[in-house]
Image 1 (cartoon, rainbow, N blue to C red):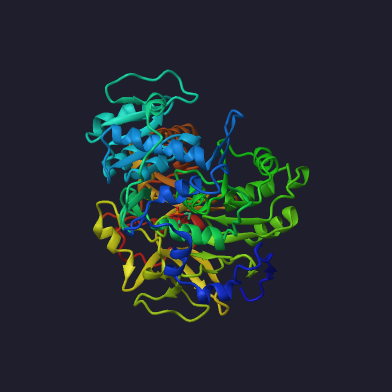
Image 2: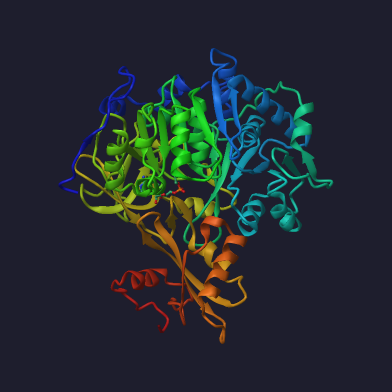
Length: 580
Ligand code: PRX
C-alpha cells in the first residue's frame, strides 16, 4: 500500500461543481434534498414523480430517458413524456387489480422496457417493488415470493412456467401480469392478466401516491452467511443519495449518455439504472443481451456512451479478450466507474491504456442503497483502493468495541448510520437481523477494511462466509440447501474460492450417499441440478467429494476450515470442532 502509483483522475466535467475537499466540507443532506428532490406541499414525496413526472412536466419532456437495445436487435427510445404516460398507465393497472399501498409487487422479467415501466409504476401507486433476476429458478423465486408475501407478479410467458410450478406454495399470490413482448402464447387462468390489454385500456393520468420519507419503496433479497436470503427494504427518500452519488461520483451532466451494465434484479440496476440517473433527468442505455466484448463495445460506440458504470469481472473479461477497444470508436467515453467487487490495479492500468481513462472504483451494498465510498472524479486514484467517503457519508474502520482504529490497521468497515441517507429501512419480517447490523451509532458492513493515512479505504475481505462471484453476492447456505436436494447428496459445504477473473468461484465440498460412484459425470449432474433449481449464476463451478464435513460440536459446518484447506493454509484453532 505504501508505494502505490497514483493516477490523477480527470477533473469533473463541470468546473463549478466543487472539488472533493470542498464538496465534503460543505455538504449537508438537507441542503442537497432542497436542491435535488421535489417534495409535495405536505412534505411527502414519490420516487416515480422525482424520476419521471417532474421531468415530463418540464423542459425535459422530449428528452430520451431510456434507450433500449434488445437481445434480438430491437431498438426503442422512450422520452420522459413516454415514461410518464406508461408508468401512470401501469399504476392504474395495478390499482385496477386492487393493489394497495404497501403491497408487494414483484417483477420477474428480462431486461425489457416494460420492466422499468413496471418498477416505476409500482412506486408511483405506493406499492413495494421487488425485482428478480430472470435467471432465478424455482427455489430462489419461492424464497423471495413466500417471504415477501407478494400479491402480484409481473412476468412473461417464457418465464411463467417457473411461477406456475411454485404457485401452490404461494397462497398470497393473487395475480400474474404477463407481458406479451416476444413471448409465446399466453397461458390462461383466473389469475392471469394481460399487461398489453390492460395497458391499452388504462388511463394515462395518475396522481403519484404521497409517500413519507420512511415509507417503503423497493425491496431486494440479499444473502448472508446463514439462512435464506433476506429482504432488504428501502424508502422513498433513497432517491436523494442515489442522485447525489450519480452527480458527484458518476459525474453525470445533462448531455451525458450513460450506461450502467447492471441488471435491474440487482441493487446497482435499481439505484443506478433508475433512481440516480432518472432522478437527475439523464439518459440511460439499457442493453438486453449476453455479455460479449464485441456487443459491449458496439453499445458504447453506437450510442456514443459518455459515462459507463460496470463491474470488475466484466472489465477483467474485456482485458483478456482478443477483441480490444482499439477496433472501435469509443472516443465519446469520458468517465468510467466500477462496483461490486475488488477492482484490481491491473484493471485500472488496462483502462488507462485502452480508453485513456481510469475506472473509478465505488463501494456500497444492497443495504446502503447508494454509493458510500468512491473515487470522486478529480481526486488522485490509488489503484487498489476504493476511494474516500461520498460527501455526506462518514466512514471508518472500527474495532469490536466500536472505536475507530488508527490509519493502517485492519478492522470492520463501518459507517455512521445517520450519515447514510439511503440506508435500508428494515429487513422484511426480521427485526433481529436488522438490529444485528448496528453497533451503537455504527452500521457494520460485514466487510473488513483499512483506512490509510490519506483517508483512502482499502477492501480486505468479508468478515463472514458470504461469497462474491463475478460481483454477485451468494450465500453459501442457499447453495448448500440446493445441493442437498440432489438425491445422491447427503450434505455439502460451500465456500468462495479465489479466481482470477470472477474474483471468487463457488466451490462445493459434497458428501454422497454410501455406495454412490463419485464420478465427473455426477459432478456435472449436481451442477446442472443447482442451475435448474436455484439460479444459473449460483451453481458451484467446482465440486470436490469429501468423506465428512468439518463441523462444530453443535453441528454447524465450519466453512473456515474448508477454505483454509483449499488454500493450503493452517486450519487454525480447531478446539470447537467435532472430531475431524
Ligand atoms: O463485499 C463487498 C462487495 O460487495 C458487497 C455488497 O454486495 P451487494 O449487496 O450485492 O452490492 C453490490 C453492489 C453495490 C460488499 O459488502 N463490494 C461492493 N463493492 C465493492 C466490493 N468489494 C470491493 N470493492 C468494491 N468496490
